Amino acid sequence: MTLSHLPQDVAGLRFLTALPVYNEAKHVTGVLDEVVRNAGDVLVVDDGSTDGTAELLARRSDVVVVSHGRNRGYGAALRTAFQYAIEHAYEVLVTIDCDGQHEPQRIAQLAAACRDADLASGSRYLQPHVTARQAPPDRRRINIQITEELNCRFGLKLTDAFCGFKAYRVEALRRLQLTENGYAMPLELWVQAAFQGLKIVEQPVPLVYLEEARSFGGALDDAAKRLAYYHAVIDRAVAACTERNAACSTSAFPCAELFPGCC
Image (cartoon, rainbow, N blue to C red):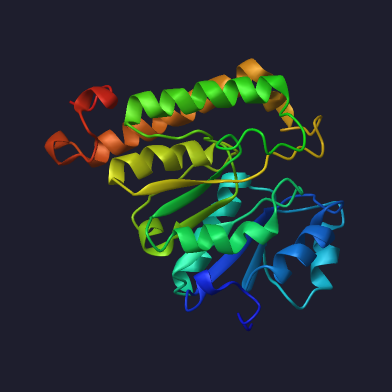
């Protein structure tokens, strides 16, 4: 696919844009129409959709589709995209959700940010005045809490721990060993990124909530259970990193106190 329609700041940069998709028949066509106008190569990971999404994807010839035979989870879909980008030797991978909450015209901006960083993460709170609709209160509260905990424990400087609009230098992805299949996989990623000493930057993106009542599914719709799940994922990631780096003196963390139990 030609990149002649893309901005000059991504000229010569071989990047892939990937969308994890599960039961997004309502949004997938409109979102993909915008994505292909603002990206080069586009991958869709269909995570076992049963609502007609797969049939809509089958009609398209402008994207590559990788399908999971059953629903495996948001984290599993992202890992499939990561592996595809590695196997096909892309320089940068951009991930964007398919629920209409992100602006595809910012894809090139995020990709270009990885020229000087390992991970460029969208933040809906760097420019809080650029807001289409406020986040649901419990989601914003939990985002603030988890973001602050990640910053405190691991020396990060994040303002938005949960934005799915990100760009990754693919060489950095090779260094990660992600296992979480669920929605909280990005929290495991933040722990490993800190552990690896990856260079992280944030890029402002608008806060757009089209469906305030959108469900996480099952027990995660309960805020307390969702928070407990997030903490469990972070703690598992810490334990795994500690195990892989028993010699704490080689850790990339600014001090051992940021990583409880490491030393």
